[in-house]
Image (cartoon, rainbow, N blue to C red):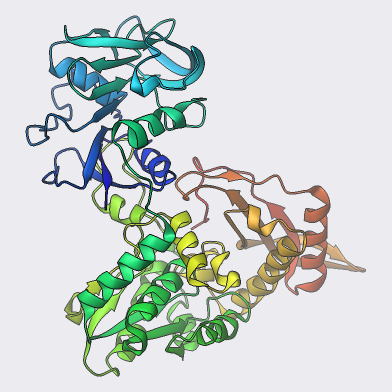
Length: 508
């Protein structure tokens, strides 16, 4: 499988570079700059990412490229370009040429392979404090901006290029074309990494890896675990044993509806009703982290107890996806992410099961495409991300059966309205939050003192950043009125208009 290797120097845009390459149906790996693997024949090119660091700093990231073949194409982006210039005799300074935001790129060498089909002038996105003020003698300028003469260059006699702008962001008008020129043109990638090819190769790999062993998988009702289950089912059939736990913190009627969908797909699934245990163990707990730990502990113990009932299980399957893999080895800096606070935690270390992760190469949108190719139920395939602790972190403060029931009713009204108004599929994630406060209201001739429901809806690509959705006023009026009239215990509805950052998508 041909691939591009991306060396991560801590840029906030590193994952976006990978996404742009994956959009070309070319596989790519992100690896820390100081953990470069042996360069195998399937590696067709190497990209050096940006970084919040300065190449002149004492502790600046310094990759060892001594093991990279001289004929392997290299592209440095921002810090990567500055390092390529500085390392081999150029000058990088921090004075006089700082550039942030939009800039006008002027192509100086229209015959260069990296600048193929790029207009003589176009908009690009800059984000750098340092700049290359002098290039090594064998480097050639191929593009400039008004304030940065060496905005793009190539090394004469070697397939090495550098650009001081971010081609991967959408603000760079022809950035995708520049990356296509590098990946498909200069590196010669065929662009054959499709959902169908991924399924074919993954199923064959799973069969070889697992053999005749049994595998246990915890299903959540979400996209990742469901697609992982279908891949494994396609590879090993009845050897896969799935467990779906009802914590009492799922959405309204979700346990029965999702369980029916799984069985309709031919999966071997056991549903475990454990809501009384989860809700009982949450009694009196108000601190968010303590709630997550309690929910995670109960899930692990319930799952483990059920898994032990299956004889001769050798493997634990997980729905780990590529952002999770990147997070676990992120380079310190702007790319170091806040670990997803809605995970419920791992399984006990003493389970003595080998781990298999069929989706660890994929981004979320790629998981959805693979799921569609596998015929996953559209209701599950299009489902918004849902936190592992479920409604336990959407009931702020202490979680009680009464509060969960209130939130389930309000959530059902909100989500069904989004679908009815054809808004659901255009939203990354939507949900309701029950606030731990009561306010005064008036219903009929009586004063009320009841809870407030907050509505949340955001757009995003991968959940790392998000913006709030501008829902129609008429829609919000309908949802608010329906919730207040139909959900006993609620007399006020508000809408969250904070983006991420500074807020998070979930409230706890």
